[in-house]
Amino acid sequence: MFKHKNKYWYVLGIVIYSFLNIMVLNGDRLYAARLPFHYLLLVIGFLCSMLWLANYLIEQYLIVRIQVVHQLISQFILSVFLVILIASVSVLVTSKLLGQPFNFIQQNILLTAGFLFRVNLFLNTVNAVYYFNIRYREKELEAEKLKTSTISARFEALNNQVNPHFLFNSLNTLSTLIHSDVDKADSFLQKLSEIYRYMLRTRSEELVLLEEELQFLKQYIELLSIRFGSSLNIYAEISEEHQCKLVPPTVLQLLLENVVKHNYFTEASPVDVSIISNGEGIIIKNTLQKKRTKESSFGIGLQNITERYGFFDRQVKVEEDDEIFKVCIPVIPNNYETIDS
Image 1 (cartoon, rainbow, N blue to C red):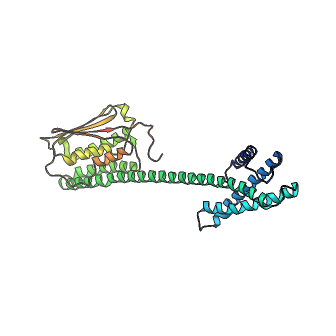
Image 2: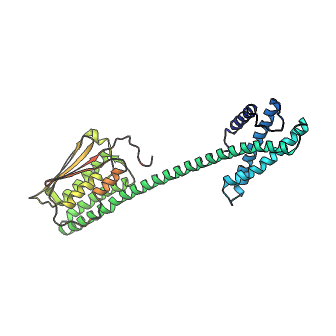
């Protein structure tokens, strides 16, 4: 506090307050006899200025050298010794200039030291409040930085989950096609490389334009059609108004992957999937034909999407009955502030 840019104003305020206090209160004085008011103002100005300077020098040069006790305690103890020194010097000077009854005697020293001690106690109390307020703000800032770093790390971890999950399923598909249809396997591999290029480009992104996501989804649908043909029918219609808004990357692909993973479908009994814009979100709906045996899974999918939307205070709605499974994901305004900002 003693190094504060407004320190001169603080000293002036203490001088004025102390001067008025002594002028009004009969019991509060610096010497055995009353000083004329102009001398009193000069003496109080000198005492308060020297006391502030003493605390400033302690804070600036001595505290950093003392590591045994807390710096606030060291500050106060050292300032008490300087209070006695400043009081003695002040009385010595006034005794030389004014003589009796302001001479250098114990009573005058004790009265001046008592005044200085009260001012010093007040200054050190305010300094302690200032110190802990600064430390509280620093800790608050550190906590906020840590929270932001943690959120960013968790979000990045969720984004990174998508890549190995997608790659695992794609390689399984490619393995099957290699043994059944080499041409389809080659086409599948080319589509896979295009899709994976997009996923690598957006892996560090928190949000992407829905328009970009739909272009990526179109490639993924073409990849699915290579394997499943007419047994999986996907219909998509998204309004232009929604396409300029934002979504977490690869969410639509994950939802389609979820359909493939949990449903059986053939040309005789296809699964129909529709992706349409509605209100403030996108609805992904499919006819429900659950597999009797579940595929091995990393436990990603809907949970991943739900957690990623949670970072933006948005909710994913899931509805299911005997015939239909429906997921509604919100779209986010283009001016939304992301985690890093």
